[in-house]
Length: 342
Image 1: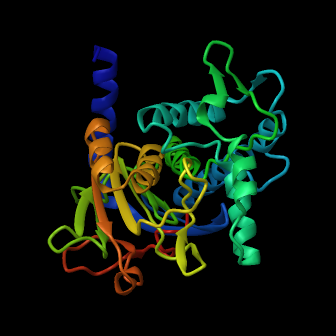
Image 2: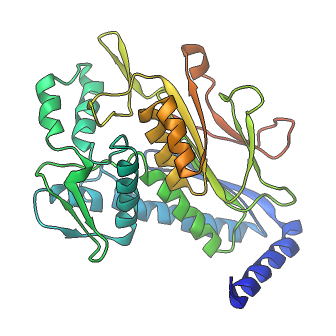
């Protein structure tokens, strides 16, 4: 660290110490990405908190227009429609997420794969019709799936989908990135002590005033490990606690195994604590696909904390995150969505 960085960091630290005694708690929520997104922050006054939260929500809206595969006009949808054609120049945000996705695809031998869009579309239809995709449909979709079919060029900032009909699905990584970016926007407006949550993902900034961190409770964790104290980090959970379909007497998760094209049936929940939400989000999904043994190894390689549990019907209804500021388990901020909402 050079002298300028040291002085800058010291000034920021002193400013935070001086101002913490007057910070007040504010909470705002809006619907984005098809779910409730909540922002809990500490700011010197309501005007500051409202301005910072609005900027964060605006940033979320901007990024939805990039990453959503539900929106025909999104940048992601336009890229998918270009499949089979030449490389396409993409935004720095989209390239960053796709590059991290490719890294995880490589390290997990394809267990994490954002090219599963053709499978995703089959399973969205299955949820409506109540019928499994046929073998022929799965085979046809398989010809358009595979992370190696997506080529990224860092120098030109381009992405090429080499097979016509490929379709990208960033459901297991983009939300985490979006929350990271929203938290950065809060800081830009002078609010560093903030927490942003959306459907099983939580991005955390500086601790609340006078505390060492945000006290996060995962109700489903094993006894003695329900609480974690976190700041400037992220926590995500993934699993089939409620978003699933039962077909032919088999319960299939909404999380798709890229190797089979089918929803997972392993009934595990993975909770990951990482330095940022993009990684906690993606790794939680990847671990669910890999299973317990390989999932633990991935967490070790990635240097993150992971809790992997098998679930049963009785436990599913209990699996929620909450945030408390006192160790008496009182809840000042309860996550409104079950962790499956991803």
